[in-house]
Image 1 (cartoon, rainbow, N blue to C red):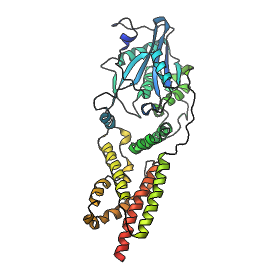
Image 2 (spheres, one colour):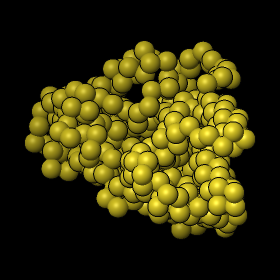
Image 3 (cartoon, rainbow, N blue to C red):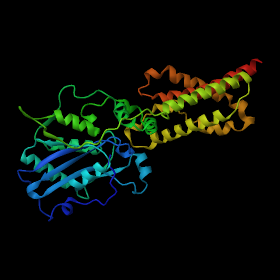
Image 4 (cartoon, rainbow, N blue to C red):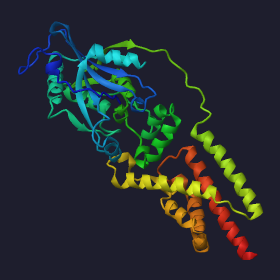
Amino acid sequence: MKKIVLPIVLIFFLVFPFSGRALNLSDAAEMSVLTCGPSKQVHALYGHTAIRVQDPQQMLDVVFNYGVFSFSAPNFVYRFAKGKTDYLLATEQFDRFVENYKRSGRSIDEQVLNLKPDEKQQMLDFLIWNSKPENREYRYNFFYDNCATRVRDVVGNQVEGELVFPEGAGLDWTFRKHVNEYQKVLPWVNFGIHLTLGSPSDETATAWEEMFLPDFIFKHFATAQIQDGNVSRPLVKETRSLFQPDKKEAGWNPLSPGVVLAILLFVILFVSYRQFKSKQISDWPDYILLSVTGLIGLVLLWFVTFSEHPAMQTNYNLWWAVPANLPFMFLWMVRKWRPALLWYWKALSVWLMLFFLFNFIIPQAFPLGFYLITLMVLCRALLHSFLFFRRRQG
């Protein structure tokens, strides 16, 4: 969500002219949720959520931010891939927070919470405790524990009563469909993320779970009620738009995965047909397709086996991205071994046809590009199989 490569400054040193004693909020204090719009930067595709605490009588205006991490942390990429990324709760001055988002051209909306004085104090006390060095770190989980869900939980746990949402508040979308709406502005990034997301991401998200996305914090908080016994009150008492950038319509991308892969499929079909008619096979399409799908399969197998990300487990992309394709490609390079290896092409043909036949019962959604790649490999596997039979009959 938000990348801040800065030293983490405790709230005591940032805004308080003292330490070691509690800060008592005045009656003028306000607690609010800030929802920041997405951008085309990968780490900011989904937007951001934070909590603002404002008390003019105490000269206090600070943002509690659960979305802090650093790319400079040791082995960041490996730890992120393995699901061992640690995020932090940090604080920063409100003016600085807003200025950073304005420079990035990202919208900022504020929802002032309808809280009692003791609820505000309790929430601030918790946030101060949570921002201490021994408490501020948490293990990031994209769908279930991120900067948005942390804000959702803080608000839900600190109010007197229970947060209640209108019936039918959720969209009944899967997690995959939710993230796809944000990722499609970067088509190739979207393609890569769908590769790594397994069948758990195709589960339907409840209204509560939808709030892993900041926009849905904003949406559901707007209609939420605090239910305390027989008494209820709106969670949000006022909504403010702090900054709205000029909107830019996303145009059609001629180099999107669907377009590029459709062209490549046409090329593979044309080349394969010519080779079938001439009975002369060129190896370059096989080497490319076997290496690409085999490498994808090995990477996905690593994620399924070693990653702690729940959404990456049980990934049916391994049905068409066959890890064995990569070692087979190296074996296929040895021409004298090819007669003994032709069985692999026949087995691969059957395996990929089964993928298409039973696709409707697989509990995982596949973007169009995955089918196009599978058709390319199936085309080459069938070519080798048919030519094998033709030679035997001849």
